[in-house]
Structures are given as C-alpha cells and as structure tokens.
Image (cartoon, rainbow, N blue to C red):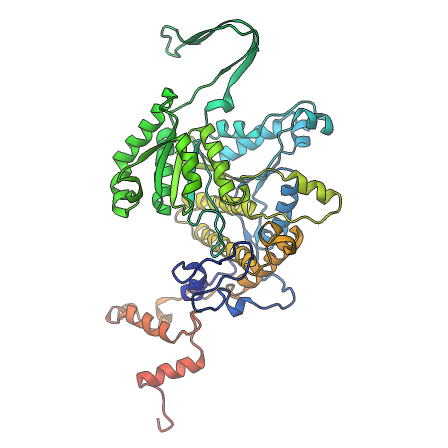
Amino acid sequence: MASTLRLISSRYLSGVASKNGLHHATNSTSCAPLMLRSGTSIQFSRFQSTDADVAKTGPKIKAPPMVYISGEEMTHYTTQLLLQQWVEPYFDTSSWEKYDLSCKSRDDTDDQVLADAVEAGKRVGAIFKEPTITPSAIQVQEMGLKKAWGSPNGAMRRGWNGITISRDTIHIEGIELGYKNQVLFERHAVGGEYGAGWNEVGAGTLLTTYIPKDGGAPFVVDKRDLTDNHNVCVVYHNPYDNVRDLAHLFFKRCLEAKVTPYIVTKKTVFKWQEGFWATMKKVFDEKYKDEFLKEGLLDRSGGDLQHLISDAATMQLIRWTDGGFGMAAHNYDGDMLTDQIAQVHRSPGFITSNLVGKSDDGSLIKEFEASHGTVTDLWLDHLAGKETSLNPLGLVEALLGAMAHAAQLELDANPKDKKAAEVHAYVENFNEILRLALHNTFRYGQGTRDMCGPTGFTTEDFVAKVAWRLDRYLQQQIEEQAPPELSEEDLPVPAGKITAFDQKAILQLFEKYDKSGEGKIDFKNFSKMLMKMGVAPTKSS
C-alpha cells in the first residue's frame, strides 16, 4: 500500500468501545450524547470539530471481490447514497460484480439475471443484496411485467446450499432499543412451507408416495380421504442433512457472543420435527456442552441445552428483554419468531438477515441484506418531492458484513500474502470507524426521525452528516506516508543485544509519557521523561 493506517490507540478509543465505563441513556428516543460516568461526553473533543468539509486523503484501497445485488425503491436510492459518500471515497469497488434484480431487469432478461447472480455468488462467496420486490398480481399490471416473478431468495438458498439465516439484534451503545443485550437467531434456510407444492382439489383421495432413489420399493407416506368439495392440498418436506452444519454455526456464534442457546420446535405436536432437536442436542453434547458450562452460559437454562416449544418461545421473547440468548428453529418458525424479535427491538431495521451457505470446497458462502423491505411508502413520498427520513442502519450492517467476509475470504485464500493481510486490516478498521461515526451521529441527536422524532435528519442530511464524521475520524488515523522498513542496523538496539532488555517494561515506560495515546511523545513529556530518569543533558555537560 502507498499509505498505511496507524490504528487509534486503545486508550484513545477505550471510552467508546468499553462497556465498563458507560451507562445507557435514560431516554432512548432523545438521541442525546451518551455520557461517561464522569459526566463527560463519550465523544472526544478532537472528534467535535465543525470545520468545513475536508477533502478525503490518501489513495483508495482496492476492495476485495464480492457480488453486489441491487434492488429498487427507497432502499436502493439510500444505498446508492451510502456507497457514494461512505464507501467509494475510500475504496475502489471495480472488483465487485454487480447484478440488477429490479423487477424490470428480471423481466427484461426473463430472469437470467437471477441465475447469473446465483452463479456469481457461489463462485465469489461474499454477497451484498439490497431489498428487492416480489411483484404481486397488481404490481405485474402496474409495471407491465410479463409475469409475477417469484422471490429470488429461494433460488439463492438452493444455489448456495443454504444452511441458516442468521438474524441478530443490532445495538447502539448508550441508546436503549428493545433488548438490552444481543439476541441471536438461526433460522433453518431450507424446507418447510416455502418450497411446498399445492393445489386446489375437490372431493377424493390424496396419496403421498415416496419412491426411493436407490430403486427400493415405493411406499405411501400418507393417505387421506377428502370429503369437502373445496380443499387445498399442500405437500412439503424438511431436509435435515445440513442441520449438523447449522448446529456448529449456532453454538460457535453463541459462545463468541456469550449468550445462552435454546432450540425451538413444535415437536410435541409435529412429531416429524423431533429429528431437528435430536441432531442439535447430539452436536451440543459432543462438542460444546463443556465449553458452555465453563463460561457459565447455561446457568439460566438449568445447566443444559433447553428445548422450547414454539408457543412458549413467543412468550419468552416478550419477557426476556435483557437479551443475552440465542435461538435456532425451523424455517417457518424462524421467520415468525424473528419478526417478533424485530418488533420487540423497535423495528426490522434493527436486526440483521444473513444467509449462510456452503460451497463445494467447504468454505462458507455468506449473503448479507437488511431484514426489511424496499420501504415503498417513503419511496412514494420521495417521488412526490416530500422529505423522507430512512434509517439505514440495517443496510449499513449488511454492507459492512459483506465487505468483511470478502476480505476474510481473500485472506484465507492467500494467508501469506502481505497485501491481502493489509487489505483485511484496512477493511476491519474501516468497518469499526464507520460504525463509530454512525452510532455517534445518533448519540449527538442527529439521527433519523424514527429515533429522534420530527426534528430528526432527512435521509440525505443524515447520510451527509455521517460522511462528514467518518472522514474526520479516518483522518486522525491516516499517516501521510508509510513508515520506512527498518533493517537490523537501523534498530536502536542491535538484535543480538535486544534480549538483554525488558521490552515490556520499556513499553510501559513509553506509555506512561505517551499522554495522547497516539504512539508519540511530545517535547514536553520527552523532557520530563529524561529528567525523571536522570539522563537529561545539563548545561555543564
């Protein structure tokens, strides 16, 4: 890289990142600045400048390859603003493969664009998707489409060997939403009602027959007599081969987030769901139980993995507002329960929606999108020339998640490549600083109207304000030029003698006089250090 990043010192950002010195704002809708226990604002004075816009500094970094799927309406408009003002000033995105899944594009290509997007996602492995429209019969007429194109999600889940849809709560430190601590959810990505075959029939007999692939004898799974003259017959199945993969993903994420896991089914009535629970429990007992016990994460669940009937889960989601738990469920139950989580946690804009699949080589395919739709009502207002105020939090989390996964895949493919490691570090740091800029904008009372009421910022003003703050934060980190690469003779202490010194003690001494936490000692503190050590030159010397 032509330039390198000097990460902000841990002391410099400790007030922002550490939960130990913070308390939540008492009014979750005020968007007031979060306060430290000392009473000072969490935002440091060096981040409070209101100077005129400053041009972006430093060269653009080439973003790792990923697939970008565009949608339409208000979320498409807003995401383009985010790209133009938050991402493209810092990244060259020419390596991104872009596919337009708007209704018009799908209609014009007879849905070939969807097939191309699925193929690209399988090949690349990191995907960002804007919300899209699955047109109704009325929309088919309004848009002049050839047909009602189906939801692209099913094709994506099949094409990417979908395992789970991870839907987690998004939190802004210091602003209370619904759940105080994070809630994780794994929704089985395949099976259930979404892939059902159905038909309307009259009176008669319905047979569901299974024909084994290995040539074994067929047999009847179900036979029922239909006595009504008007019936709807529905047939679906739940594929369970990938439930073990789902279990590993779920339990690993729960351990990482330090939350208590629960498995949700309706197996007391729907006996066919027993296999889901049995597989999850088996993986848990074999691989994860001891670690959960060691971390104390099973204290609230009686020391073991607990099963919840889906009816009970709906009640607990309302009661357990402290958060700190995770759930895994079948496809349909997961869809319904995560909608409930979204409502407890303010809105669908405050939870993620990430599809995790598996490529043929075993690497994970991850597709990131906001959990909400295209926000048609605000789009109509925008077209009518009215002000809008769309909170882009879910869109941003999806975009950052896709960029992070793309960087990780590139690093995994080239673990010894120095540039891949640098890009990975750059993306990781950029994501952290963008989140800080975004969250601080809410804390300053400059959020969108869903958070701050009628005085909140418009869509465009909010994006511009975060862009300004992001640039100010990043400028504190960018060195004008890369530091030189030092050879042994350039070192202050030759390598052969360095073992004689206590490097840890030297670092502690340096940090004592590095008052700004920026990895520098100014002349005043340098003088103090020399005098304290008794090695400062005197006039006589």
